[in-house]
Length: 436
Image (spheres, rainbow, N blue to C red):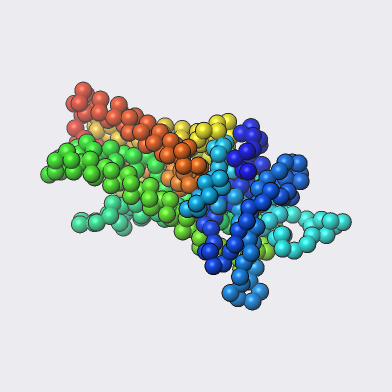
């Protein structure tokens, strides 16, 4: 079983489970499953017994190739078999890790075709989590993810809106996350760092855990003095909590479901040429350094809107990635790396929120920097996309313990930071610094 693995095993040993446990199960008309103990290629290498899922498919179209589903894809699907879910959260570090050799082999050379044992094929490169191409690859997607989030929030915020704006952000990022996770083998066979660039860089920067938590807390507190009683305050906060969790999990599942159509029709992926690999790394680095030029070259009015945010986007994403790769594999109860990133980022967001409202209001430049730290660093440091995949992959008891702790600790931190500032320091939440 995937959960029977030792929590101290290296990250790469779990990357196969991660792509598999999350794929939505096929329809009953298309597949008949039987679970039996067999030795997979990975188990032959580690000499350990694992459980594998065999499928008997009916092919609606001639020549359609269906590849076997993976453990993580199975775990996130709303399957009845709880045993398919991950029992050790330490394996979930593979969500953000670049594809392993095993996953690259699956994407480049599907199991349906025989491989010449005498002349093994030349596989694409498997990148270490902290290799320069991987660390550089998340720079540009962090910038684009932060811009996408700010753009979505801008076009979905209007008078009379029936859905709160953040739900669009979380849904978009989680959908792309699920779709990319379902294609991890193929992306790994093409260019491994591209997978981490999309999941950690783009999706993690589009979604934001800290802004969600602040939005929920402001619903409880009602500092704008909206005309409603305390019961409606509670309903508003609960609505934003429940709807966000439901939309995030549903979007991940939908993305995984749609990724099946790609994997079934394109099981072969050729490795990226050297020109693409080097150009991708160089472009990502240059794109981030260009944010410094845009910050100083564009008018000051753009700083609080976007240029300050993209300046702090990559540092936030990089800190979250480091926590995921170094802390998550050390703890088996729930993903500690993402938990720390989300709760610390929420506390920082609450602190920056108060600093914009101190009695001696900051200068316009300082106010723009604070807004950039909120939208850029905190927005990219915290994530709902990885959080949703982890919740979907864990067994129910661990998953809801993880949700409850993440949500509860974040709300308590905001209560301490914002509550003490409002009720003891006398800070007025409606008196905010000016950007001009």
